[in-house]
Length: 247
Length: 372
Ligand SMILES: Nc1ncnc2c1ncn2[C@@H]1O[C@H](COP(=O)(O)OP(=O)(O)OP(=O)(O)O)[C@@H](O)[C@H]1O
Ligand SMILES: [Mg+2]
Image (cartoon, rainbow over the protein chains, first blue to last red):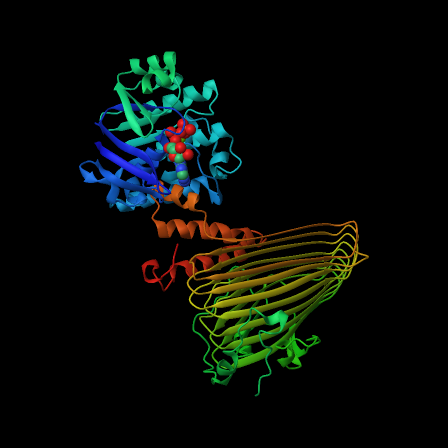
């Protein structure tokens, strides 16, 4: 589904990703762990096409097509969703308006008709309910005045509504209380644990991995994947820290 | 007519470019009344005035409480306002009175220049709601005088939708004790504009509000100059200016709050914001505060920038194409000013005008150089 080969990328002329290779097949959940500043968010931004992140070598394909040749909105329409480590506030635009615009833009890009206002509201109420966000919050401006945890839950509501095929979730668990972590983890399983879908889960904590059980765990350090393994690798990291493993 | 126009060397006109006016004024008006006129429905047979090239079209008007006649409006040496003649439209409301519904006035310019004064006088506790719409492509020049007695309330909405030419509006307002003067302006056409206002809060606890959204593209220029002057205690005022300039366009706003020595407990707020949609656009913002009283609360802020790049990427990452994302953020930006409009029908009409400004964009981004 997603195939990354020898990916190098720079930000402001500084090389952050130094040759990443990773293949994700449908039905798989991959976790990426690694020290602060190792390039995890950079990888997620490069995959989503954020301006300013320049790929200097290597390739990334999605369903066999050159991902890096697509504009960010085309990547979204192709089925990629980025859950932001720091969700952005957009004053003046309500969550409902934001999501309806986004969903219908994606549908149009795929040659589908717009969802009617009624159907959209039903869908967003259902998804917001499942993540414990009220429709009142959905009518508020995007992430404005939301607590850290509410922003992360909002990312998951968006994911539920957009229903992507590949979710790249950048520390969706950070800033969540224990109950919210459970709600968000269950949300990820409910929306993404499907044979034709896949997840790239960036996290620092085993707690999320106890709920969303990864098939593979990778350690990113210094812009490279320094180790890959099964779920047991996460436990090992939890016990021993990165210093041992990344060395 | 020989025009004696101020030059940009004059401080109050430094962001203006009036050089096109003599040419526009020299063009002969065509005089035809457009088949479609942007009246708002839903106000029954409320007062309506249609002016074509400054002349009332009686058969398409329903003046109600408004009459045409000599107008008391003092141009105070204003270079454009002094061009208006003695006769114009007048709305005079007696104590506790209000016109039947929304007063709608459409000004059509079919070429050339027309100059017209107006006078609105609201007696104690009188009220009026006025919507003026400007269309066409000549030079429409107006001087309007507003006098609000104690407790009077005026809601004045204006939309400038002409496809070209020039619109100059000069307002003189006196707002009495506890009275409220609220205005909303939208420039969303192709005309260049010059907006001047001098609003004096002459009674205690008076209120003045000016909200404006100025949209410009191509080589268009909007140029606004507003002063709200607090003369008496306990007054408050709000100014919300939102400018959007694309291509090579220029939006300039000089907005001022004066607080006289006697005007203690004044509460004045000013917010001037501008967004440049292309690197070749220009936004000028000049907030000014002059305070002679010691116990006042005045806040002002001015920001000029581009659309928030992080927000743009967030939208795009959710599948919104770049042009649509820019439109969404720009609309949200402009909404700061327009959401203040209390009348729902008027507010909707203004939003629809903004919408058509976006959809009639003649230039697609790839054709414009210097876009960020
Ligand atoms: N605009 C920039 N200019 C220069 N360096 C940058 C820029 N943006 C990010 N970096 C650097 O890139 C490196 C990787 O950052 P990144 O955000 O990808 O780390 P991360 O692994 O996600 O860390 P964390 O666990 O703290 O979220 C960091 O050293 C960071 O300082
Ligand atoms: Mg990060």
